[in-house]
Length: 575
Image 1 (cartoon, helix red, strand yellow):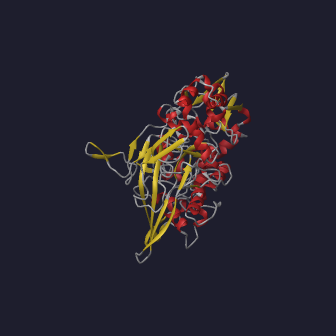
Image 2 (image 1 turned 30 degrees about the vertical axis):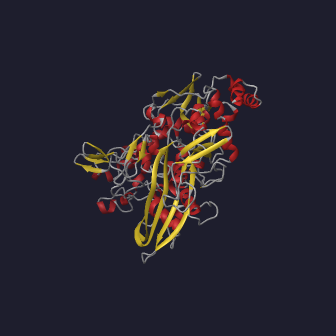
Image 3 (image 1 turned 90 degrees about the vertical axis):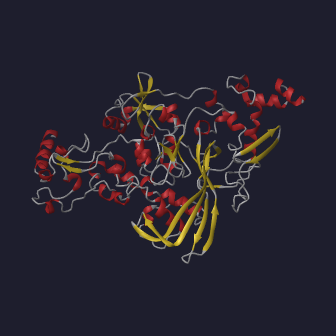
C-alpha cells in the first residue's frame, strides 16, 4: 500500500507545471523535499497551468503565516498549528494585560485576547495604544515587510524555523528556496527577547548601555540595532561553558504552546532547573513525541529506554536520557554529550533553603532599567503594529538610568525567593494636541524572574549583609546586634521625582512595600523576612563553609547561640 501511495504521489507531482519555471528548486529541508511534496501542496495555485498568471492564481507566497498555516501547514502539522495560534508568542496577551493593570486602567490583571482584541478596536486607551505602537512588533505573525533597518520578525512559522541567511531568489541554474530547520539558534530567539527583562541578552553576556557609543579602531562597535549599544558582561554558564542554545533547555511544548491560553509567560514555560539537574525519567516508548523529535533532530540518539520529562507538564526532554544506568545530556545542535552536574550537597537540601529559587543564589548579575519616562504626544502620529498604518498619538520612551548590579531578592510568582528588578516603573507625561503639558501618573513596579545570567553560586555573605538583596536599594548597610542603619546612594527627591522613597528601593527596612508587582503571589520581603536574612549574617561571618558543624542542625545551633551556650556567643555577649 505504501509503495502505491508513493508512486501515486510521484505521478501527481510530476505533472506540476510549477517546476517548468522554478527549475532545480532547492529543498526546504530533508523532510520537505521538492520531488516528494511539489510546490502546490504548500503554496496552492494551479498545478496544470501553462501561463504564469494561471499558475499563480490562488497561490500564497508565504503559507507559514498563521492564517495560511491552518490550511497548508496543518495538512501535516495541525496539532502544532493550533497550539501556536493560542500561544503567548502569537497573542502577546500577557503584555497587554499587565500594561492595562500598570497604567491603572484595570483594578486587577484580566485575561484578554491580546493582539486579536485590538485589531478592529477604535479609540484605544493609553495602555492599548502603547501596546499597539511599541510592543506588538514582536509577535510571530507580524508582517515582515514592515521591518526596514531592524531585524525582521514575524511571518508565522518562518519567524523561528527559517534559516535567515537563505532567502528565496532566482539563479541561472535554478531557484533557491528558503531553508527550514528545527535547530533554532539563540540569535533567532534574540530577535524579540532583548527588551523587557532582557533575558536573551543576559544569557549571551550582553548588557544594554545607556546610549553611549563604544568605539574600536575609530568605529562604533557593540551595536544591538541602529539605536542601541551594549557592554560585554559574564554570560550564562550554559552559554559560555556548554555552548547551549535556548532550545537545549526550553521544550517544544513550552515554546510553541500547550493548547491553553495562559495569563503570563511563566505559565506557558514548563522547564525548570531541576528537570535537568535532578531529572525524572520515564519509559521512552510512552512518549512517541520524544522519539519523533530525536529522529527529526538527526544528531541526538533516539531514546530507546528512559527519557527525562518535565515535572510541571510531563513534557519529554528527548536530549536528556538514561542509558545503561548513566544520565546523558546531548546538545541539540550537534549531538555532543555535555557534562551535567546533578543537585547535591547540603546547600540544596537544607530546610531553610527550600524557599529559594535556583536563581536566587546562581544569578551573577541583573539588568535593571529604572524610571520608564513615557511621553505621549496626542498631536503626533506613529506606526501601529496591529493596524499596519500610522494612527494618531505618538510615544517616546526615556529612562532614568540603566544598571547591571547585584540582585534584589523578593518573593516571586512561584512563591519562592528569586531576583527582582524594575518591571517597569512608569512615569507618564502627556502633551495635549495643542502642545500643552498635562501631568500623567506614576506607577512603579518590580518584576521577579530568572535573569538568565547563571553562574557559580554567590557566597552567603553576598546576600545576608547586602542592602540591594533585602530590597532597600544601593547604599551602605550597617548591622550590629539588632540595630540596622542604611544610607542610600540615590535620592529621588533631589533627582526631581515626586515620590519620597528611592527609585531603586522595593521596600524599606521595616518591610513596608514601596512598589507593586504584576503577579498575585509576588511581593517584597516583610519585616520578619528581612530580620531573618540579616540575623544569619551573625553566623555566616565566621562560619562561612557548609562543612561547618553548626549547619548539621542549624536551628539547634541558633538555639544554643541565643542561650549563650556556644563559644562564640559567650565571646560576643561578654563585650
